[in-house]
Image 1 (tube, helix red, strand yellow):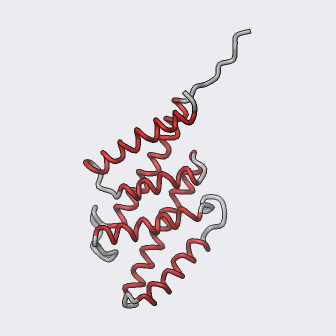
Image 2 (cartoon, helix red, strand yellow):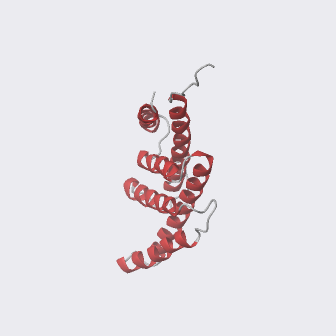
Image 3 (cartoon, helix red, strand yellow):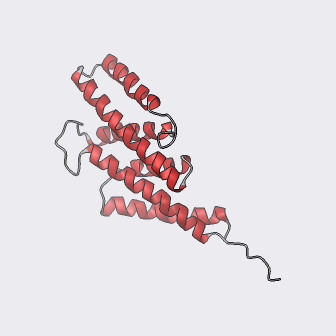
Length: 168
């Protein structure tokens, strides 16, 4: 089949599977999984894209964690939020220097995934670390999303028709 149809089938089936997986077996936020999956492709796919997107997503989670802790320590005002986000976002740009640290957007994806998960779950970054802690949930979703990216790329390639050279 054509590469477009193969990708459609691969990603469609795996997206449905990811919904079932996160709905019944692995309780991670599906939106964070999809964001990490998209980051894999946006970073170029393949092993190199997986490494770049995974590392920067996790750095984004770390930056968001520190930012949220700092906001709390400063009282949580709008001014504290703004000032801390200046630093947190700046760090994500500052660490980008090529190689594995070359896909800055994934840092912001990880940051946003953690902040969204904190808000959606009503939990706090300073809560005791358990399997339902927002950092654990988001890092789990990032790992799964990257894995779904790798599998969907492989499956799409496997389903793509290969032109066979005519026999001489």
